[in-house]
Length: 111
Ligand code: AMP
Ligand code: ZN
Image 1 (cartoon, rainbow, N blue to C red):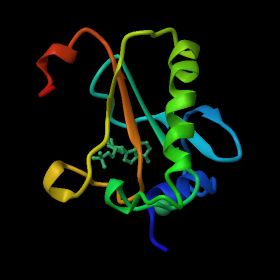
Image 2: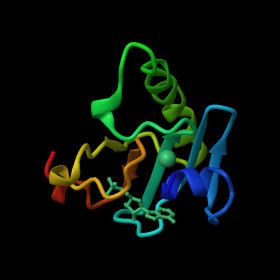
Image 3: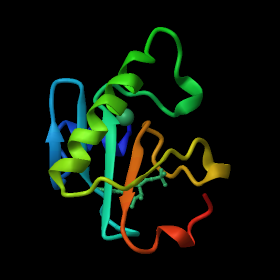
Image 4: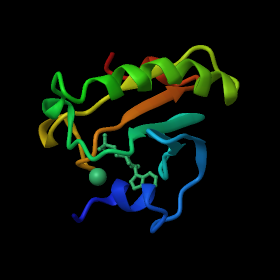
């Protein structure tokens, strides 16, 4: 499968890892839009939020359990979580991921 984040998770593409366990990986976005811009992704390939089902939704809950710990580890308690689902919403990498954004320019964003 030609998936950028699967390759990154497999170590075939370098990344700046912030947190990793057997289920998820968190790494720095290569083109940060705020002071802190991290991506959290399941290691399992799920293309997007439209593909979340009762079978695989546990990983989403797990990611949201881990986000406060990850945020704290980089020194932030105030942050925005964004998921783009589909090209029309700006999704460019078709492997489910959540952006964690923190910094002074968050007020310029849509929500
Ligand atoms: P999205 O547009 O919501 O699909 O988010 C994809 C994100 O992945 C963008 O913010 C990109 O800057 C980021 N990105 C693309 N390639 C890499 C990479 N090799 N390492 C880290 N982040 C990346
Ligand atoms: Zn993938």
